[in-house]
Image (cartoon, rainbow, N blue to C red):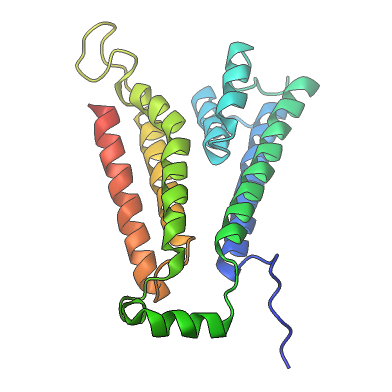
Length: 234
């Protein structure tokens, strides 16, 4: 006899996503600490991009944290071999932000994946034949807050991407002219925002089979990323 499902347990795909996310973030923070503590021969540009990767991984929670660090003139990559204890604590703070992101993700998944008794599902399908035909469940209403939340959390990234494409004067070339070299950051932020929207669409069990919902989520995330990139680039 199988044990009843734990209402506080994440689905398998969500557990894998959390483990992969935390593992990658820990590896990135560890790489930043290593490159700042030892002479590795890596140039400043690579170390700066590595640090920005940590910031991107911990978005959107890290937006305010990074702004404070920038104002304190600590956003520059640490010089090899001179990493201070304060800088170590600052970079370890990104791990705390990653834990916060994982906790928010867990809360969102558990809040929209509450189990429904089989009898209630049968009654619902009997009363709404179209529900079984199209595969849409009553959880579709959760999209009314998960999708706007993803869009809201993407705004800081879009703001940064707008400057990362061509600099503060934009891609028209006026003012200070076009600045290049940070396009990779704009592309990364666009991909992150697209992924966030895809997760917001897929995490809600509003449509079955799951494969159809996954395709819609990928399409929505891709479209959101491309449109956002086009708007911020323009």
